[in-house]
Length: 265
View (cartoon, rainbow, N blue to C red):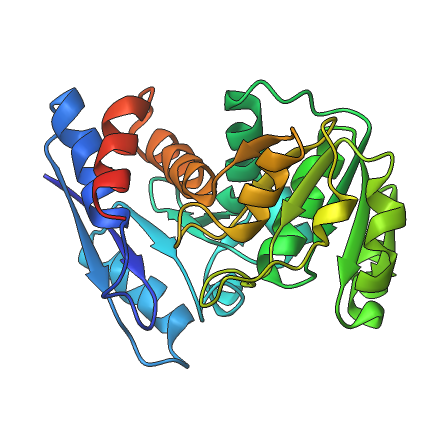
């Protein structure tokens, strides 16, 4: 039996175990997915310990995505993003990946969104950084908007064909944009949105990385404006699907994993 897992602190709320185990069951794979909660300053040590224990693969979540870089050989995308959320132990050294970027790309693609033109990414934190690189690599021009404008400008300096802006520029940025991705936590704990409803329009595709609640105020406003909407559970699903496929070498049973994920929301 192969053992896969997740390190984070805290991890008790994670929906990854049922999602991944639904995938193993659907394909008849003899595997188990477990969680580990090391102290907040021991992410790299946890990766090293998992390797010694024979763990086949790890997902990595807050607060360890940057810390584990010291314990893995990151692929070029993870290196550029500066964060790892998936570790594969099948090679001579642990290999680190960032599937958050791929998760956003695959979520949008699943909904028939053409990844061309201009995207506006709201938020310059870890998720925003991953999404900005992922969509830039698809050939989109990326406009990053953040409450602290200097952070958006700093991130844009690292991302090809990107520019950084304050939130006060959102209406102007969205006027001719094709895709909007909210990578902030706004909308998670209250019925709020980082984007003025009047700035949304029917030519947009809107992905909100927030998945609890599944229908945020941003998505309700986007639907009312006639935009294509993609809830955050799709991004969560596809980052897990990407990890599953890297670890197992099999095409993930997306429907089974999606059903298990949504049952836990």
